[in-house]
Length: 206
Image 1: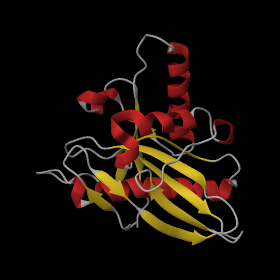
Image 2 (image 1 turned 180 degrees about the vertical axis):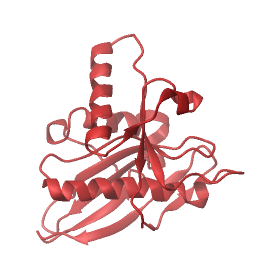
Image 3 (image 1 turned 90 degrees about the horizontal axis):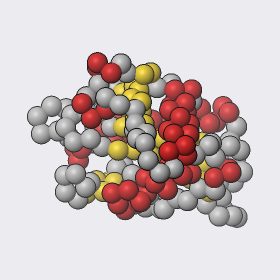
Image 4 (image 1 turned 60 degrees about the vertical axis):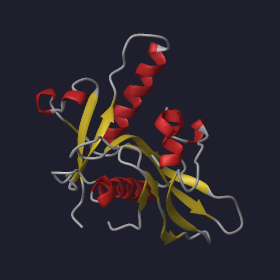
């Protein structure tokens, strides 16, 4: 999927802007794809899959994620009401020629299952499209653009361990069950992802 990304800033701190209409909504509005650099997003936890709102907040605050556009959202813009997010994706770029990675993603609970599956596909395709952008190109070897990663960090012992573990379990299950992430064996992982969950999502052919 070719999207009008606007990428700026130095290597390691790229800022991603995107505002792209996807479709007209039957209720009189439209669906629009944006990054957090263009419109900040804040989720009501009860309206979303378990722990997704928490993971979005954490991604926005980590390493200046909000300003760098590290959360992608699909918004429903309704003419007679407020804009509402209907799908979100927390993503990350590893330096080098690794695929881009999704930390967590999901669709609002009220969305029809058929539409929800379409929106998940849009989120994954958006991250895959970013991998091919010149702003994220490796100096020597091209990044893969035929798949993205789903990464959940290892939960180390420490404060709030039970909550952090539950959050990681929920994100892992979401990647596998809702997005089809296939677990990558430890022997096939890069050194920075030996622990925790790492999965592969193959992108649909254009």
